[in-house]
Image 1 (cartoon, one colour):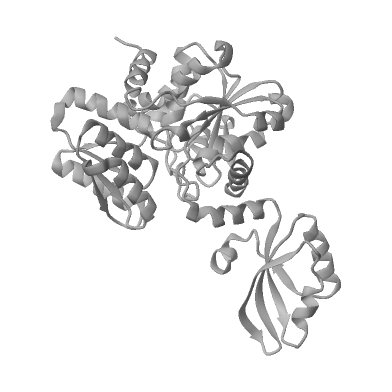
Image 2 (cartoon, one colour; image 1 turned 90 degrees about the vertical axis):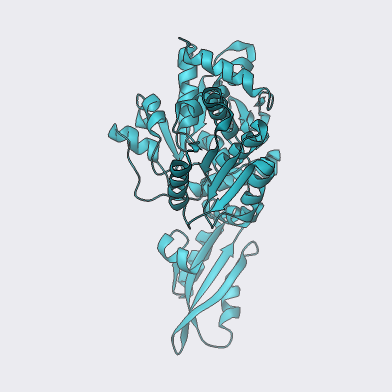
Length: 418
């Protein structure tokens, strides 16, 4: 009977029919910044700009070997899994059906259709992922088609494990990394990489990186069982999973909850902007998780260490860029939103503007309502070049008697008025 690492080796060899091994690149900028040797595993450079193609290809290859050429394949996804699935359908010349929510951005629909060529049919069902996932399962059951899961299957895990095999082969001087940072969604990538390294006799420290708004692995490890989250922040759409996969959790349940770092979504946006501006690297939110997690590692613990960061994907929709920049500015303390009680008198706006410093800029000014005949509630957004300027502004507002509320971090209010 073959071992897991032997099967992964076979899968990696078969993958070479689609694309060469993605590069493991030393990043000088991050290495200098953190005082460590930082290597990026560039999964954003696969043909579909994410690692998901690896699992989909391995699943197809094994299914076709067992079932022949009669199988039709189905998946439910609005992102990277759909695109990897579509690419593999075209490669094997097999019919595939992709279920997506009706709310899926047209750009993602078009890219999936492009990768699939004439072999993929797209069905838009429901407003949310759960709706289209149920529809896909029902379709697969009634038609006898093969459902291709995004992460919860041993063949998917085997395909994702080829990332670990390539890292091991590409490491300078053949040495194992000291730390491997792995983004977590459903857990298929982490399950494959950790199992491969374990069988290869390597024991790096793992830094599992989850969005703060979707800590399914951390909660599950803390409870020593799979936990389904009641609520998930979908901003990091490539990793916002309510429940870690059953099969991946079998591989990961031996790790401690402390091995998972939770990445704040707004801080992640600052990392995305930093990598775009400094390195010219376009990353989706999930693809930046491992890079951002470096911020949580004490410098004395990583000084001189070799750290591999798995960059899981670069499928970024640039229509989201204004939101990403906004979140980044708010995280860095360079932008805030206030609701002011504005007097309804001539010259009030001029008096307010006189309080602003030379680096302060009003980016939004909107009357919300007149709460009294002589006053009105005004939403004001202010952006500045130095976060310390807001302390100075607060002092001026207080000294001149302006009544206001800072709503920047009040999610309930900001969701409705910002």
